[in-house]
Image 1 (cartoon, helix red, strand yellow):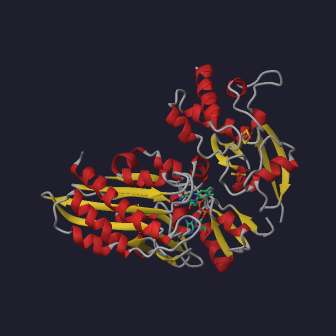
Image 2 (tube, protein in one colour):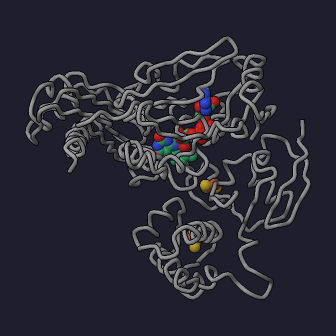
Image 3 (spheres, rainbow over the protein chains, first blue to last red):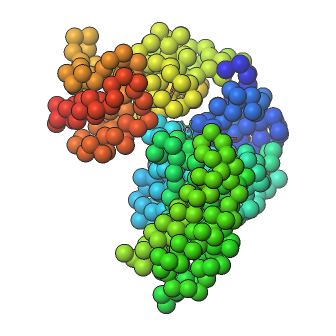
Length: 290
Length: 156
Ligand SMILES: Cc1cc2nc3c(=O)[nH]c(=O)nc-3n(C[C@H](O)[C@H](O)[C@H](O)COP(=O)(O)OP(=O)(O)OC[C@H]3O[C@@H](n4cnc5c(N)ncnc54)[C@H](O)[C@@H]3O)c2cc1C
Ligand code: FES
Ligand code: FES
């Protein structure tokens, strides 16, 4: 690595906030480093201070409460998250998304929240967390704020997080009765590399009709994007294969993919429609409890 | 500014002064002369640099040496119980012909250890999924999968 930086590994959140305040835009937080170190080496970011947060006690907490829902701490590893019993039981789609991220070694280093904060349009954990109504808890020396993940992403590599700020946790509501979610993705080398396209969906059924549907697509726009027209097609209808196929087509039309090393725009557009259709099928099946 | 840290590798303790931007891979290979751990892609994709950090496989090319301070680091040099004996995983790799050029082998064996520590009787599917972060340009993988399977049976 040619780039030089100072390294800090504070043990308390207060100390993290103090360092963030002191170094402002020249600081970068380091969680797993699986994105950050590559960005530093590529010269995409040039921090003078790297603040490692894995030594902060308790920041890796993952917990579930039947009223408050799921709590994901800033340094919760992708592998611990995917293997957590409450995540497997109550949020299987979030587990699937975490398992679809990278390979074993990277999941042993990388964090769920680092995946979000890196703000890649293809971040595997973003679509389902947005679809399920997740919220980021953001702290700085000047106080805190909560940002719905739906409003978190601003563009490729850009989120609402500014200098001095850290995402300390992400919370996800308890999945309501009669609801189900799903995440499906495709990449060149099955699951070990970055997704070329992904779809996270959430549906809630009420008297066998779709009372609520959220569809979020990954890698087909500058940020993980909602397919609102496809959602509107589903509203109030009875779930069926034909309906999900129509929603998939609408989602493909709404997508705004580009061509890059991972896939062409036309492939992404077609594939995202199919993924949305299949994910809706899986989410509806989970909602019905089969 | 250099950081003076303690690295615990294969049960031995080393005090080293390192620049904070140096990776664990560099420090293991260049400062400690533990060259069993390889450097392939340097970007987290190939698994040649895999080591165990507090019992979990990580890519040493994406781990800063300063982050590994005080943790239990295990490399391929620490796999065999002594200078005379090999670890059952190593024996199985030799017996099954799972090594050709050998560049991926250290990483493969540590990924195999990580899997077998958690799952002593994995299915072929589980072996393949668990080893998917390790690339091999020579063997075509079948013999590596067979070696992990054979190692699991040896270690029972
Ligand atoms: C080989 C390989 C394969 C990969 N495959 C995939 C894949 O399939 N899918 C995928 O989505 N990603 C993939 N990635 C990318 C990466 O591994 C993930 O995005 C991972 O979750 C990042 O987490 P981290 O803890 O390593 O983040 P870091 O690299 O530590 O941080 C990422 C960014 O977020 C910032 N940040 C971290 N934590 C916080 C916080 N709490 N508050 C504010 N900012 C913060 C950092 O400053 C940095 O800019 C892959 C990476 C590699 C090397
Ligand atoms: S050298 Fe580290 S993963 Fe390839
Ligand atoms: S034996 Fe040559 S890379 Fe695997």
